[in-house]
Length: 142
Image (cartoon, rainbow, N blue to C red; front, side, top):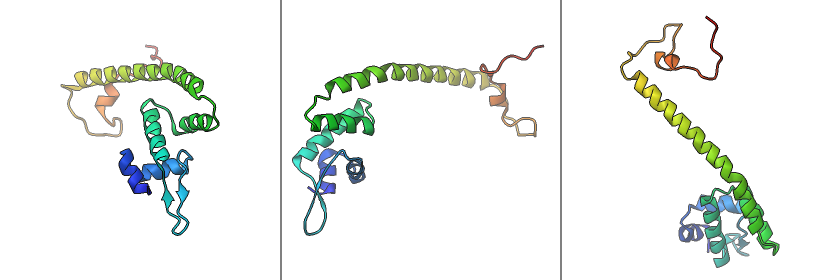
């Protein structure tokens, strides 16, 4: 298969196939006459594996390590478990940050509902944002 056929059968773009090839995740052979990259059914299986791993949140570098273990005959499963065990708390923390951001946005929209628009005047850029409390800075002493 050429790049475009692998991409079509794998449900990705040709550029995605080229990217994975540059990153060493796919290893096509070269056609001896024209130098075209030729992919096998094994490459298609590998592409499907890469897509599953990406859906689970693995980076291209992590997938490269996983495939390297497998290509050397070692089980990558312990590595996969460790990576997910490390990543899951990070993802949960990021979700909490995004939930807090969504709440701040909702509060801002609610408080801005009846505020008039302002024109920058050298002292104020946008009254809406400037009216929102900055919880990260210490309160000034009165």
